[in-house]
Image 1 (cartoon, helix red, strand yellow):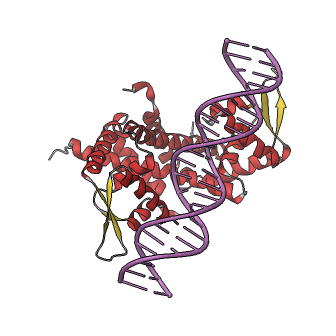
Image 2: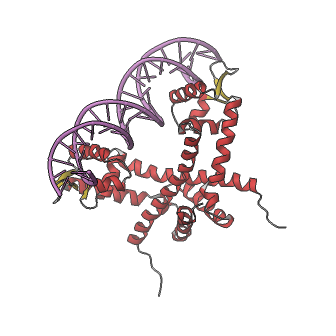
Image 3: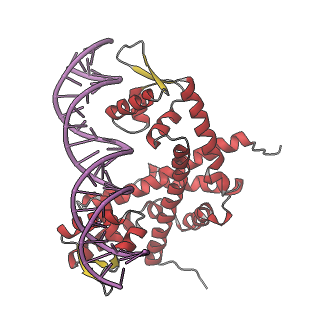
Length: 147
Length: 147
DNA sequence: TATTGTTATACTCTATAACTATA
DNA sequence: TATAGTTATAGAGTATAACAATA
């Protein structure tokens, strides 16, 4: 008895799989959201802090977070108000680096530690499962085979 | 030579994996977003239409889409303006069912067909890869092992 | 009294366009 | 003239609270 998968089945199953994928990612993101909430920090600010492992030009942050420069100004203002970053003028005086304050660094460590501890990929998958998952996601993301 | 994975490695790799997962889902969602754009329909309206395979109480839709009842009213207004749904009073007269019009149904079919055709899980993974991916995502989502 | 849907309002996230300062 | 950041403004998406109708 040969296992045959016709196109209709395949499509229906693919849809289910895509939904699973999106839900998995959403649950994973929920861990981050929850951590940010515990710390009483809006998610966008938390995301910015995590990227600031070292001082970075605002422009660079805009590229990293895939958003407009003006929005980074907005985030920087909020982070500054909370005493979490300083703006440091660069040697090219047009550039401003965002640098975590001591308080900002402490918060960054807290966030990354908590997120790591509760990451779903750690809590729900074992080493083998993680090893199996990676190449599949890489194949999914690999745009070299783009149609 | 034994392959040892210490905790620090594991955490770093898990973070990478979580990022891959989120990016995969985002690319998958981008397919949906692109389809909605082609059809000139805001994403939330497209999502609602997809759920309406058959008439459903607004309340139910709110549960499905995990949002507030008032927001469903908002969506329903927009869908109605576009001639894509009707509001049908239920036998319990408090309830209103959202029902796709002929035009709405046609649009729904167009959306689901296009999304299926361009789904990343179909275009980038083969049958075996999809079969391997599913149980991993299920393990990730399985909350029975919740801590 | 509890539930469904509606209204008015407001908040969060993010972008666009025009601007200033520096290069 | 091109680039970095800023300002003012606007838009999308979504929620909260108070309300009306029905159960």
